Length: 389
Image 1 (spheres, rainbow, N blue to C red):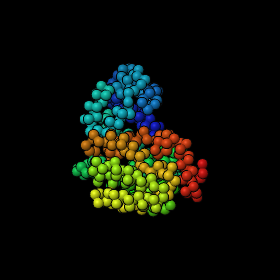
Image 2: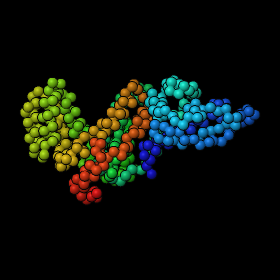
Image 3: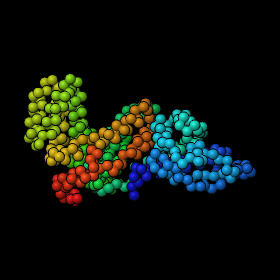
Image 4: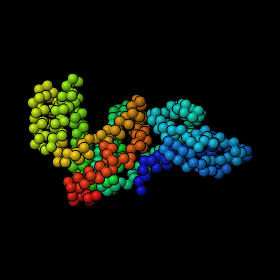
């Protein structure tokens, strides 16, 4: 089944460390495993012994290679060490420095005081590719009450030229209120084709129904979702609307304008929201026509939101959840300048996503209890598709 992010990281840490240990052993003996050059060299491999080391992500069980003379002193997992520093952080920055071996070499020297060969580095970095392939094709749940999709801008080298690309992240909230990163896609073709590929991917991996999909002005995505999941309500993220409108507002007026907009999205009914929008237009339309335009333009995608009882709107109210994740990912990508390839970008984002799957309940960090209530509200809105809890 699907491995949780935590187990996945531990598996990966194990694979990376064991591969590094094997590479160190080869370096120590001076010949590859099974190479006749080792005959008569005076030392050889001598099986493996188990060892558990604790990392900042919990215990990792390793098998450490031994040599016949007992002279092998591994640097990446020192002999008597039972606790590794932030090995996950080390791996993360290994991949995240744009993947140049020189950077990684100097980094390992700084963090571990280890002098490593280039071969060892390339061995260590290959391992994450298989993990990503597994993660990208793992089976998903049949039903996600809520799906959030948002994009992250990156600079990536493509055919020798650094271009701006967008990596899209889909986060599903499951029936228990837990969040899962369902996938990560870097846009490579025109929108309609790209989104068709994303939703086909979700369907092929077992998703049969999504109640509400929250996204923001992503051309082609609402149509692709409706095509694959005809009953899904596609909801524009209110936070995005507010942010897009705020871009046009002078700093001094922001408080007033924000208060006027709050009247729109907290309105008890559609009629009340329309009245609030008209008032907003009357008060600020002449000065900020573009901000009014943002609301008018998105109105039809925004209004489904008003069908939900006010106390449960905040569930779909925002991409706060995904914003938070993107904020974390931006932090680790922003110092990079650019990535050498889509693969290098995917590796880093994948590793950054490792902390997402949390058991803390609903999308706005509400506890699971709040989520149960929210699910019951959703069950009332979609009685034929969602069993009552």
